[in-house]
Length: 235
Image (cartoon, rainbow, N blue to C red; front, side):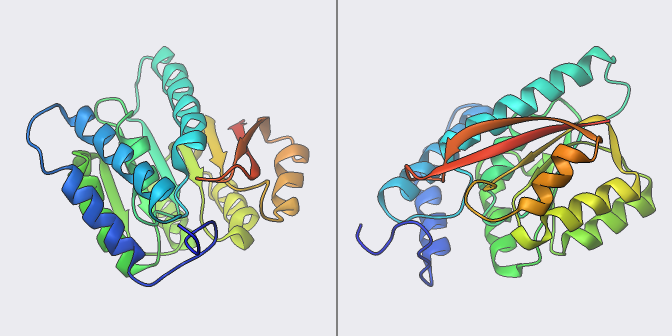
């Protein structure tokens, strides 16, 4: 609809979005994976046809899916000696949390951080509707505080999705590196680098020597506007 396109925000949109997902999830039956797919379809339908939202979306979501599947495959070759830990900066309404959690191996966990209390509350219901709540830990705090917790607990991560405040991309990636919480081979996927100026982040990913990177052309979520996503492998 006119006035509801990209980068337009209206009060109550997230609650309307949640209502659409509740309605789509009302029918009983199916597996947990089916529930997650149903939630994602309903979310994409809302964002394509009712109101734009800043989820990663279905098109770039497939890039995220493929990067996660590839990383899990490499992890499995090691015998899965450690639990598979995924990390997300920028939960928003839980769409990407569902995309990630539905593909995790048994005992895999996603830690998703966002300081916004209202959207974290919505995310909690979204991951529950998708049947993946037991695999997702939502924390209402900054990326910086989350990295501090990981370092303090001695936790290592295997997969990272970065989609929060664009001005914090480089700073928070460096925090992850400096804290020593990235497992060798950790895949780091980043959204919106073709839409926002994150040149300092890209220069670090390309030039630091810490990452082997690939760049995938895509489109801004729920539009035809050009965007792209880097996938970096650490170590």
